[in-house]
Length: 133
Image (cartoon, rainbow, N blue to C red; front, side):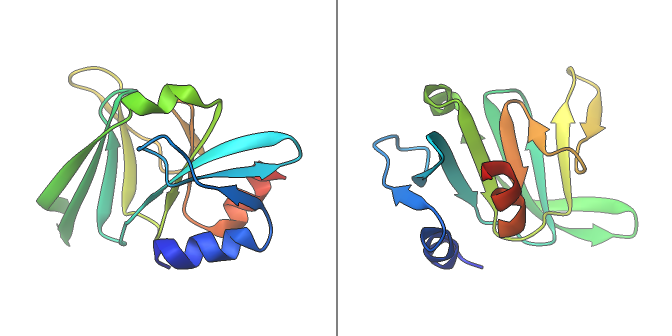
């Protein structure tokens, strides 16, 4: 799904507002709770790495056996994210892996975790519905 289709689908179930914050795509309201939503364009070969609670690396690449070869990457600053309590990072497609740096040399695979650094990380609209409801 692309961003427009995701937003259109969420508008049928929730109250959607535009946000003044440049980081988030929109605000979603349900039962007196406000959720700030950022949609990240991903593919099945995308690797998401939380370098810290302020930086997210979005890498595109290919799988070569057991190795993941990065072709390109983008750093996304999460500095603007402290304004809201409930934050959702919604991936357009399930990424290959979600990783989190513990320190300078240790990396943890958090693909199964739904909360990483105070962000709800989702890849389907049904997961968003579970969080919001």
